[in-house]
Image (tube, rainbow, N blue to C red; front, top):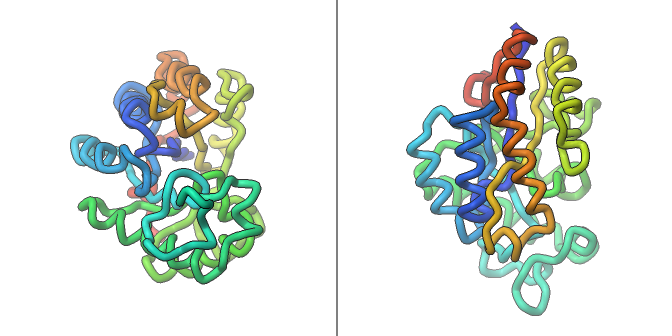
Length: 241
């Protein structure tokens, strides 16, 4: 049977996002999520994850939002101690300090008492060097699959990735296209459901759109469409590499 992983990014970004992801899992098609360990609602997210063990939880490695976990990575932060923006980080970050911070984030995840299912990155930063090579090394060391961003990336043994369900393209039409594709090729689909709270408004320009995504992901129409397509919803927990 064809299968599809529906991964909700940004678990831990805010309590509203956390509750939205859980709702999208319990009442919708989300099977997997990835946790940002450096964000204020990370521990809240981990406590929710333990109440819903059917939800696969991976690590959302992050170099562009909030503050670092490692105490000594000066090239990664601005004068206020926050990560550089997505546009600036790769020009300013030291490779050794990127590795330090990403390793610290993986180790922090384990302190929450969870077993990670896989690795991806905020803003899919591992699609760009030097982050890509560093993440591959860490994934091998910790024996974790990585979200595949490039079809020709033979070093990553994981599913084809689809990022189309986002912003203006977060629609029923897009979902049906994804389901049709998943009926032929096993896929991981990215999404960003959530409820809007002040923390989210403070940290992300992608905010109101999360409510729209949540509505579509939990709509009975969507669940019926999955069933009609005979697609099995799984998480990375069900895969063995």
